[in-house]
Image: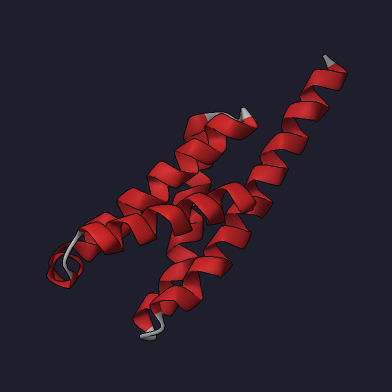
Length: 103
């Protein structure tokens, strides 16, 4: 949860400082999911989880956080999405440990 949330916050602040507001008005629909996916890939790498399942979970968690965007409270959905992805990654990690023990 800290990896996804922390990397998401750092990247969001860096982009906000580097790019004008008009960029996000025009390209936020693409930039947001791209940043979310990059941070999920970093999370998968750091936690040594399989990339494709983590990206799948990130897509599902991103869809759930879309409720905040639709309701006009964009950042309200991000913590919910991060929490869902953390639960997903925890499930993936537990499954990996279960398979390792039974093998």
